[in-house]
Image 1 (cartoon, rainbow, N blue to C red):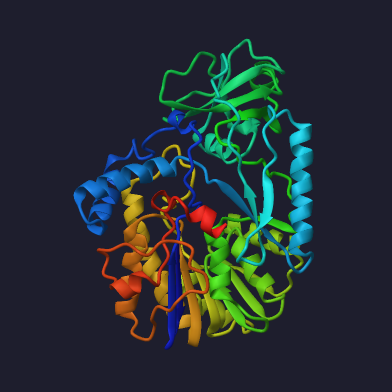
Image 2: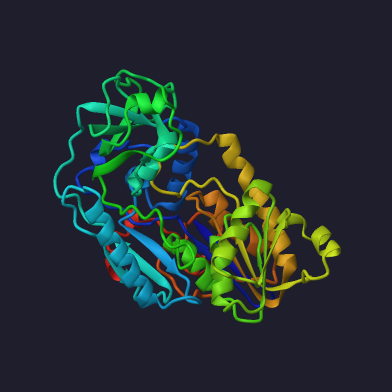
Length: 463
């Protein structure tokens, strides 16, 4: 993911962040695809060219790119949960979450897997870290095969059970109570209701207990609930569904860093330009102690409700939510006198290709779509600079690994707007920005890129 923090006339901070930065292998990742870009060789070629531009040699670039692709298909080693410090203390929240996990692992048959430990982050004051544990034994596929969609498969790798809408195929003989192997369809060609062993590209992602029969799924057509409760996982990411949403919020570490690097203060005016689903919005308002003004925008009508819901759950009254294109805020300002002409702090978590989100079994995006994002990001960034008060701070972020959407955007902004510049960040846990995109060596060290495939010790040192 990418974060850019700008202070007009004084400061700009840019953090490149690729979500979920931790690469781990438990001996199980051999089941997963080596290349999530297998269906898009054109995108793969473009990303590899970016890697070559930033590497000292072609051999280094080739090895780094191989590691990157495998890293993208694996889940992170830990899960981070942000605490609503307006309602509880971090220690109380830690104890509550730890107890919930203990009860969950006792209630569900997880084959003796160790309960993950919940710790407080040593540096980030409102963050809990749930450490994943290694699977105790090698997981071998069960005899009966259930095929799920790729997005369902990715969710399972992150700790979810298999919910009914994700199931595509199951054998005729499957009954409730059966042990089944879960396979993710990597071609999106498995037909709903498939009964045989799927012969297309697929990835084994673990075993579980069927809670519903095939008849329940495809004849009675039960439409909700858990279809398969996972009992043997390739990666022991904890199932964290059903969290107390008024106290805890699942959020990736780099996303949490966005709020802390922006560092909004009580009484300030803050703009969250592309706010849905509202995780960062609630964080900004919480850091401000619910004092001041947070204007949260998103142009998608179907996404704006989630911002309001999250703010309501966290009892935040300082947030104004609007359906609007952040690249054209003047029209909204003209119709609502309560919206400031300029802001003290701005967060631009820009629309992007999302090529840094993990785990990904394969990507569902075209090269044409990929190339459509940098122009959007530039328009939004130009709007953000114009909306920023002199001396204000702007954080720019994405969840992609693409140089074109990260370092290249930063270099463009620095050249286009001489009244902004990069500054040292409050927290710098990631690596430096890539070479070859127009940033100087000093500027590269002021941005953050989270790609832990080349930082094997970063979890132990930072978390």
